[in-house]
Image 1 (tube, rainbow, N blue to C red):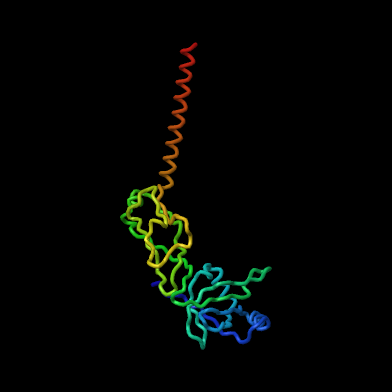
Image 2 (spheres, one colour; image 1 turned 135 degrees about the vertical axis):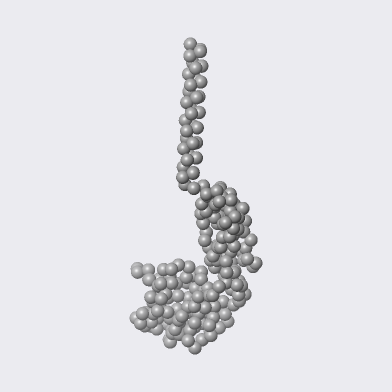
Length: 222
């Protein structure tokens, strides 16, 4: 199971419609609605600054929250939409979806890399580049994995790990159908630069030898 699900604190909103929503905004709140789960929709509101902070942090629409509203039972929700002002691009309304334990949702799951001490590529001075520190997976709301483990203990310089190389937690699958890279082991920049210089020098010598041989042929023909 995943670690602790973050709380999302909200207040129940009295009244519905455009008038009540405008009043909420004048009070420094962002109006929203919670729907789904065979329960009547619940009008709520969240302080504008709190919601804006979460939006700026990223992944608000792909994070599972434990919604806490005074007088209501806690419920797991995920954001399905955030409406914004067309001019200021600031949030004006949001929609939250109640989730059952069997509901399938898309979430970003963090990647944990293991085997770094045994990795021959790193031991030889290579550098690991993490391409995806998180992987978006389709998961079940009641069985969210805490992490995806990627073993790099056998990687050499030039090797990498793709999603097809990883054993994913049971009951999950990537949201992207194609194979994609997660990390790679590359040579140190100094070593790579030295190898490039050697290749250039070899090329120059080869060209010089070719010209020399061709020149010798012309001399012999004369």
